[in-house]
Length: 114
Length: 115
Image 1 (spheres, rainbow over the protein chains, first blue to last red):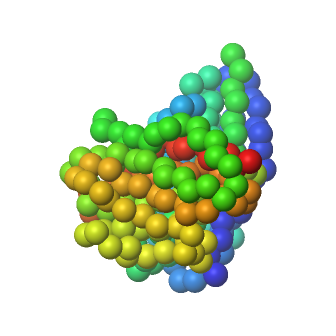
Image 2: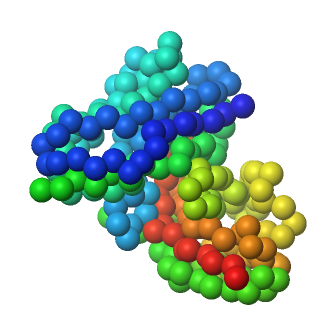
C-alpha cells in the first residue's frame, strides 16, 4: 500500500542552523512526492514537489531529492529563519491516481528561535 | 492569492449529534476534497467531489459521512451521529483541474471536538 513516514517532531533550531526533516515512503509504482507547509493560522500550502526519481524539488531555499533507492524525500534547508517556523508535511500521490488523493505523514513542527 | 475558507475554526459537539462543517472553496475551482487529522496521527484523505458527485472516498468515509455542494459557493461535510473518535482537525481543499501540474489549495481547518 501507500504510506509516508516522517520524522517525529517537534524540531527546534536557532536561526541560520541547517535543517533536515526526514521522510520515507512506501508506494506501489512510482509516486509523485510533495512537501506541504502549514504556517500558524493558515492552510497547508505546497512547498515543493518531485515527480520522478532523482528529481530535486526546491522553493524558498528548501530542497528535497526523490531517492528511489532509499525511498526517501528528505527536506533540507541550509539556513533557517524565524519565519520558517511551521508544520511540514510530506506526502505522496500514486501514479495515475487523482490529484487530491494524497497520502500524508503526521507533520513535523519546526520552531526557529532568533 | 485566493483562499479556501473554513468555518468555524473550532466546533464543539456532543456525542450522537449531527455536525456540519463548512468550506468555501476558491470560486472557479471544480474539484473539492475533505481530509482529517486526528491528534498525533497522519492527515487522512476522506473524499473527493466533482460535478456534484463523490468521485473517490476512503474507507473512513462511511455512511455516517456525507458531502454536499448546496449552492455555488459552499462545500459541506456532514457527520450524522458524531462519535468521540470523530474528534479531529478537518481540512477542506479545492483545485481547478486534476492534472499533475495543478495545485491543491487547503483551508486552515476546523477543529472538531466531540464530548
